[in-house]
Amino acid sequence: MADGCACDRHAHMYLTVEDALRRGLSVADPLTDTETLPLIDAIGRVLAQDCTSKVDMPAFDNSAMDGYAVRTCDLGNGPLFELPLAGRIAAGDSGAHDAPAGSALRIFTGAPVPPDFDAVVMQEDCDALIDGIRFSRRPKPGQHIRRAGEDLKADAPILRRGCEITAREVAALASAGYGEVTVYRKLKVTIFSTGSELKQPGETLGPGQIYNSNRYMLRALLDKPWIALTDKGPVEDNPAKLERVLREACDSADLIITTGGVSVGDEDHMPRVFGEIGGQVDVMKVAMKPGKPIMFGRRGNALYVGLPGNPVSAYVTWQIIGSQMMARRAGLHHASQTPQQAVLAEPLRRRSGRQEYRPVTIEGRTLDGTPRLRLMAPSYSGRVALLAQADGLAVIPAETEELSEGHGLTFLRF
Ligand code: AMP
Ligand code: MG
Image (cartoon, rainbow, N blue to C red):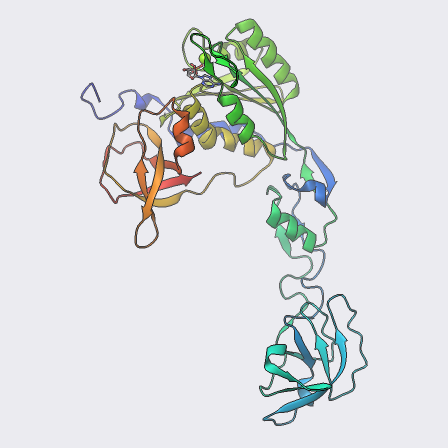
């Protein structure tokens, strides 16, 4: 606020985060190619079909308890009920039996309950006799029996196309009888980091050089079963070299992600080079902090996302905009992270104008369990190490100048 103004004077010329996201998503058209894979190989991929259950769930009436199957019509007036045991049915048995009227069957959880038996008495409620059982509470018809189709009937919807097949989805598909499923083909993603100053970690830094952190960050963010990644490594700020790598990437990738070189400096070559190879470019100045310039473009099949070089800006613009463009391109629905509610553990003063994503740590909770957020330093844009110490990003709306301690905010948990 050196100029005495509490607002960013240029912010009105920038796109809001919402508009930038909308613009980015509008060029990220989803893949349409699919492949059908054995279920085990579809883990982690993006489902490309709506799925309904192939079977009733459960498939047959079965016992919810370890205990004894009885016919309630066999029971007298009590107060004690005694029945001889006439057989045993475990999970995996067919349920066939030859138990005469007036007898019980030993039964275990998941075992089929024969159609002529109508209740299960749990073993904890029974005394074992030499060859029978005794219990005192009259079972209700249907007690402790899970009925066929009670969870889900055959043909009922279980999953919509566009979900990531994680543990929960693959378990649902397996239980519904899917031996194979149709998924979108892998998204071909090519990455490279621009910057003549970049060295690999482990190398010795010369004057003016820094370690390339964006490459590793992107590798981690893109380490997903539905991505086929090509990493072109670092590329110098040399237009001819950048052009060659970009051209190759455009010819093979569905999505190209680069970092650096998208601002307006003399060494920021990406928008021009991408235009020169026939790409359509849109450089968006977004009213967000960190991360103003983000570039995207299209050439042929390739969608191009150019992130800022500054590592914190690259991370935040990726999380807020780039990752959602990628998700849409890969066929995924519901990519955005749901913000959580939190309150400030300290007052906040800042310059308004840009929506800010401020690294925060959680410092305790309120009585109702809401996280209390401690703000990390605001001048963080190059300090990527701060991100590793933060618990998440607080979202500070563009127009906010001041907030008091205890004020509510939304927060994106890492
Ligand atoms: P640029 O967007 O290319 O102007 O880069 C902005 C700032 O981020 C500069 O200080 C760069 O040195 C730095 N930077 C660019 N690329 C990387 C990278 N891959 N890893 C770490 N810092 C980077
Ligand atoms: Mg650069």
